[in-house]
Image (cartoon, rainbow over all chains, first blue to last red; front, side, top):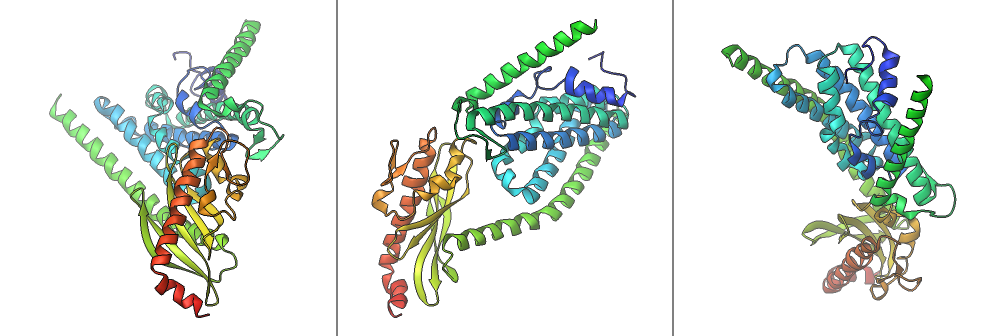
Length: 206
Length: 198
């Protein structure tokens, strides 16, 4: 991770999160939710937004606290901060987005255990100032949102013939796509595509 | 580890618990009344939608299924009893499916509504679809059976979600209606009497 973009290049930080260090397609972290909640577009997007919010808030909090935290207990403290923000998200969603919460409440609580959030807290936020940490959080969160959106787009349209719950065509071309097995196919194929495109683009610019 | 380290660690933990606890308390205080109001409102509208003709729906008792507490209600129009509503649970694939069932005076299913569940998204959650729920309308307990083949006489299973379909039809709805039949017939003097007077 030594080649993370310079910490004052905010646009670079965001791009880094979306492309170069894309949580799912590049780092292959947090693959569990990328399969569990992506069988319809709405859940995929909402999960992405929830993670984006938690990631940004955690990064801001950790970078503000980084000088006061004793190195020996930094990981437990990170976990406390993460679970605090996840609980805030959980309660807010339960109150204001009841319908969606009924379907994905369990996964919202599981954000606590997402490797990607802890990893960013440890690798970036605990070593950088607040503003770059915030942009790093935005980048990583957007990368996650972007990946989940693509995965759930393909899974819902292929598996159910609908998008965001609205029927697009009256058929279920590939029912397997909304089953757990289809999640592995979708993530694997899209990860391959993503990396193929980025290697090609990378080799051109050299 | 020096005394200074120990002090710093203690201070770190104490302050983060205090601040975190304070923030969570604030959020909880703001959101919990909304959550509670939503849940109550949701139940009321669910009951109303089940028997739209009724002008009064009253709770008449409690029962339990799968060790879960549930309630049942009588629906009246004027003074006449026009039906009953019972809450029931079915043991599904990955959760207990919380269901409301409305029946008419003769215990034929009028409508059902799924209040909550955690079935597989995309498959089991098709039990919420109108097309599935519609199959129950007008059925008596004899016909609350799930078939995998095409059927209108019985309930047709959702493809890929037979267990969830069974849980609704053969567990939640059937047991709920059976319970209503035995209970209301037993207590017939109590509940039946005031309706026969009208």
